[in-house]
Image (tube, rainbow, N blue to C red; front, side, top):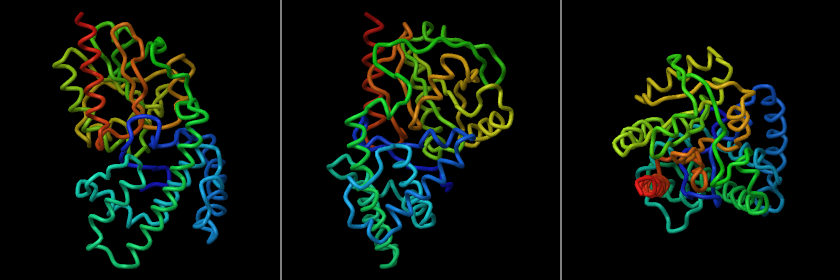
Length: 308
């Protein structure tokens, strides 16, 4: 698991508790600086012995730094967290929708498989994550634009685009008019939650096609025909058995700039036949919680409106 991985499973479907991969991971030119800042922040607020008693007000107000701090917690105890993530289907989701509580429930479900020391380590990590999540909620409640970066607003049109798919076929925003509903999923190669949901997206695309819709992926690493990134993305899609359309855009196009401004991955948008964004973005992995069912309910509503 790389340090750029943040989380695997979205419990909340809207702003509160939303998470995923930070967009700083997609910007190669700034990654070194971001990791330096994150390392300093983590050293000061997480690994320091005084951090355990600090409340969320002691944490930074920048979402990228907060995402990276969680990332660093997972990376520090990589082997343990891999075991937790692999066991998520054993957990009973708690009544609350916060991510830390879900992690705690997952750990509790496998506590018999853990040593006392490992259990204590994971539980301590969860408490640090809970403080970070509380701070994220505080930041998000005061500046919702920070989450999405781009001006993603319900009712606005998705930026016009002309590009190709991974096989070189021309594709443009006219795809929206050809379908009752289109899902646009933003991802990048090194985003573990993004890769984890590829099989789900592929199955979702099949369901959408039966309903008169479709799904397209926009991988922010393949912009400007980045051949290495395209090859890596193709391999990931093939490995995960995903075969839906993915776009290659120009980074200086309106759609490219729009995608580059997104700050949390994966993010999924619902687009109607007129190219309008419908409702709030879905932030995070679609594999767990109520996220997928929420999305399907919204898709059905858009299709029903299209048929009137």
